[in-house]
Every structure is written in structure tokens, then in C-alpha cells.
Image 1 (cartoon, rainbow, N blue to C red):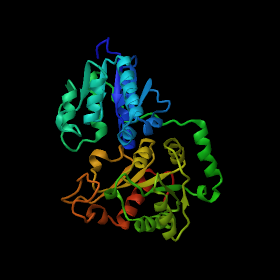
Image 2: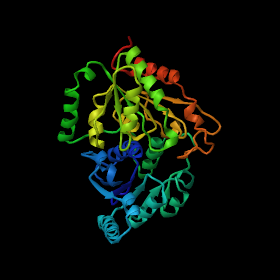
Image 3: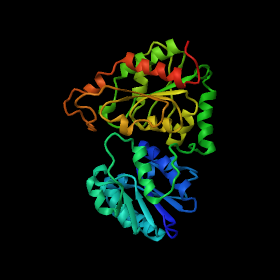
Image 4: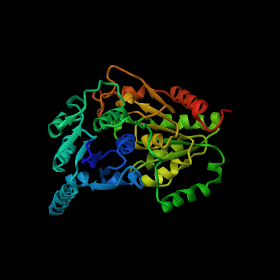
Length: 358
């Protein structure tokens, strides 16, 4: 990177898992360009993931999801103010790590003379390439998104490559509230805690709740874990149903913000989850995970690192990336059985767990 190119805009707006996957790239960017000023553009609901991140000098928050739902004069004012912030920052480089039409437009609106993005065939929306003027070479299918992001960072120069993010930070008051919950649950904390997160961003990623209940019973009875059922907005009934169908005790987590979820997962030894934001949050924290994949490709979007077990039945229709099953059968998730997931849990505990099997 030329000496004059000191101000860098990183565009990675959403979602939770995508922001987590981008953290190693920005850490690599900072390591190779310690004197640069790095600003991250992110959606408002994910800004807390960047709290006190040493690689980021400033954060610009966008509200595109809210803007689309509430198009009015106030929305227009907020958009103009965001564009004004981008222009006034006088960025030398805009790095588009998202590859969408809207992020390409944002890169262009930033006024950065160098706008770096993916090869057209690696963009999530090919039209994105019209708004960048420096593009990475094409990367074949099968590369993890973390590696795609790291590949993009290399276009700015530098020899260092860091594949793990910094430890995630939360305000003390957020951690204190979560810690109080665990102090009050002596029976829960008497054994290692396995968290189970049954929710996911869209229906095709979900596994049946009765199977989660049977799996949780086996983890508790045969491996000696306490079971903590975690949930996000609109998912508490799922956790309650799992607990109601279990034969052994389970604890339902309190409602949590993103930062409180970080504090909560610090108390867990293992997470079992479908492809979801909490899965990637826990993985970024170094917590061993067991995950279930069907419509999305774990080779590209699975938890990153070597302390994760993935259960996936690859079928001709796998990795459709659809929110509704095109065949109406949900076969990619239906064919995953409890025995297979339990076997993955045993493997995870024996290889990476903080405890030993009974």
C-alpha cells in the first residue's frame, strides 16, 4: 500500500456470522499496516461485535434493514448523513468484503479512489464488480470465506496472515449481569456446560426439536454435562419445548444481547447448533462446537478452525442456500439422526473438551 493510502474503509455490514468471519482479515490488515486508520462500516445490530476491537479505529453504523422497512423523510436524512460521513472521511481505500450490490454502491459513494473487491464470480451479487476498480483473482469453490477475505487483504500488500481474531470484549456491566445468572445456578455450574442452540436464520437450517431433546438427554446422562438451552429473538418457545421433552434437567438461558451472549458462552465448554450466528460467535471465541449443516456449505461457511465437528449429509440437492426447501422434503436435515450428532459430540469432547468422558 502506498504511503499516502492511510485511511481504509472496511465494508462488512452483516450478518453475525459474516462479521465474525471477517475479523481475522481485519486483524491481518492491521498487522501489515499498523499506521493505517481503519474504519468499519457495519449494520447497527452488529456494531457491538466490534466493541473495543484494537484493529478498528472507528465504526460507521448503517441501518439499511430499518431504512427499507420505514422509507420516510427521517430515513432519507439518516442516509444523507451516512453518505456525508463517508465523504468527509476521505478514505484512500474501500475494501468490500460483502460483494453485494448495496455494498458496491457504498464503496463508490465513499469516494475512495481505490475500491477493492472480489472477482465477479466470487461476489454474492455479480453486479458488485461494477463498483470496484481492483478485484481479487477468482477463487475456486470450496474455499472458506475466511480465506477469501484474507486473500482480498493481500491486495494491499504485507506478508503477515492471521487466521484467528482477537478475544471478543464486552463492557463490564454486561458481563456482570450474565455472571450473576451463573452464580445463582449452582446445579448448572456443578458440571461442564454444553450449550444447545436450536434456532437458525431460516427454516431450512433447522433440526427437529424432539431430536435435540433426545440428544441433550444423552449428552447429560452419558457424558456428564449440564445442558443450557440458548435462544435468540422469537426462539424462546423452541428452548422451552426441548426442555419439556427432555427426561433430564435442562436450564434455559436468560434473554441476551450480542454482548451478553459473548459473556454467556465464556461459561460453556461446548456448543451444539445448526448453522447460526451463535455458532460462529462461539467458534470465534475458541469454544469447541458441533454443528449441523444442510442447505449451506460448511466448507465455505462453517465454523473456522480445527476444534469443530460438522455433521452434514451431502445429497444431490445439498447447499441450495434456499430459505424454503425447493423439494418440500427438507431431506438434508431430516436425514441427520441423533446417533450421528452424538458421535460427533463424543469426538469433540475427547479431542478438544476441557473434561474427560465418563
